[in-house]
Length: 379
Image 1: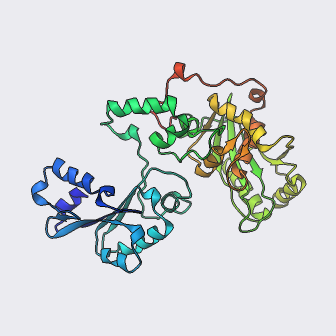
Image 2: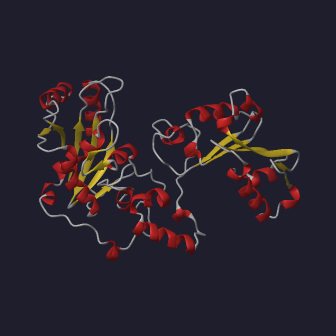
Image 3: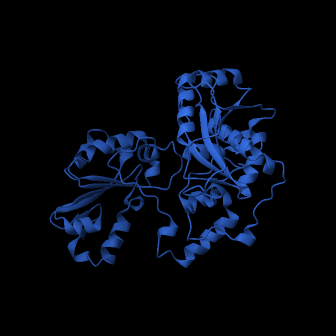
């Protein structure tokens, strides 16, 4: 923002947060330090409430919670609006800000450490339909060539002493949702891959919802594959809709991945599921499985495979991973049903029966060490 103000005379910038009770809670001090650090102090007039920029411009600071649709109009001619700690922005504040910044060539910047995929800023930029003209970057300590030793010591401490929150604090993953979850985001992140190897077998697993109402649970549709003694979660095609719609989606994803079979749970309307699939495509290979234990009990041996480094997610599946991190040994602590997680458990149970019959040991981090600063998604 300081560089923009130097290059463009009369530049106007707006720094916003959801709540700003005083300028001490704003980005003002950060910008002042950058002005001085860049040797530009003579070109700016740092005042008590704002910063005057070269050529008669200004950098202003505001809390959006205090504004109305009328009062926010005073910022219509601004060039840049920067929302810091944007994970705290409410739906209302985001709706106020977006149409306000409308000058030719104007931009909205947002920086945040993700808390939940349901946060308005996260849904807007990283949901199913992000803006076509948005530039979205995920940046961690691994991208900082000046990452200081003092912070590296803090990171390593959190890795060993604060594992539940490590991935949120240091890797930009969502907040851990529940205490005692059998999955954690550090494990999901550690074994994440950007690509999968040649796979011996691929399946599509379905956890159908019991109804197709607007507020019903989703139909979980997960694709997974196996190569040797490792499994790979490849795709999440879950959706809400009618039985015909989930069947068509499952068959589409089945074709996309050239899968070997579709796995369905017989307890959850197995005959109906088979009939629905085979009505859309007669002869499709369907494997029926029977649930004899609760969801969280079935999930525990699969979670053990993750902790043993036997399962990798190929890419990031935010909603699936959010569900996984809300499953405890006592049950699911999230809202509704863990449809995506349940479908994934069925897929991996079908792919990995020999390993599930073995006693799976956990990784000893003292031997392997914590994730290094050199790797995020390993191929």
